[in-house]
Length: 407
Image (cartoon, rainbow, N blue to C red):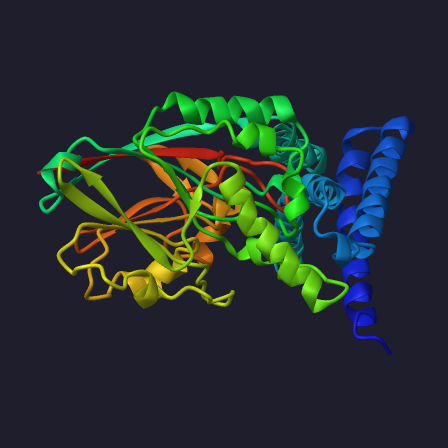
């Protein structure tokens, strides 16, 4: 028996149970056969489209926008149903407890008439919140670009770089894009920051170099006064698709690297550059991807060869797990690390000064925003583009602007 049969049976049983439970909520509050039919038809249609697209996914084509839309629709209809089930199951537990009490005592413990309808109305009302949020995230949220600004103070920053500004972008994932006008708007917003340098921290494509073909004329408009520098991310290596032969993968990787030069970026492959102002300098270090559980091509020692320990250093490393496991305790002292990779899972809740949560936090200790330990900083950019899920819910696409100050 193929290994996928048992998981498929279990998933089918789970889906049927979810649908039965959710249908009961609709049946309780609506006597309209049309409403019930539309609910069932929509659910069946989404499941069929999603499963046919996802299970029919051809890894030789990479992850297409069609695959992502199937994932998006599946999540959009499934997560609200989980909300409904959680509430209705809780109400069922309450009723079972009442029946148990009734069986033990002679008291009247029957639930109030109409209680199930009232609970179903609450469940559907609450489920409408994630449903509407996912619809917004797919239609507009993925273009809801946010400019986040930080000012970081360092005692050993060379005086000439006091007030030096950096724009960081990350995770373009051009193979996911479908709306050129919206992407142009995001690029214009990046340029409006007018920073001294621009740093791109990896994942320019999902897998294949030709994903950038329709977007080169957009991203070659990116501007920075003192230069643009970049590194690779885990998706740039073409590891997440099947290739006809090994040489095709090698050729694709070279084309991905060539893209950076074509749009005006200096790609750092375990290398460094010195940035100079008024006879003073800081070191900009860029490593290939190093991730816990992912490709670990990055060589920090090689990238930092010929850099002095006392130099002020900015490190570009795509995956923040590199900082957690290698960089932050390195005696060479990397003052500021810039990463991306996590996307903040593209869904979560962020209320400035009060709440910051995403399932991504269960995988990465540093998953979005600025972190500091022992005077060493890392900024984890939430990403410019999107991947897997074709939207963003609560975790918006990010343009980071960092100003360096001497203090």
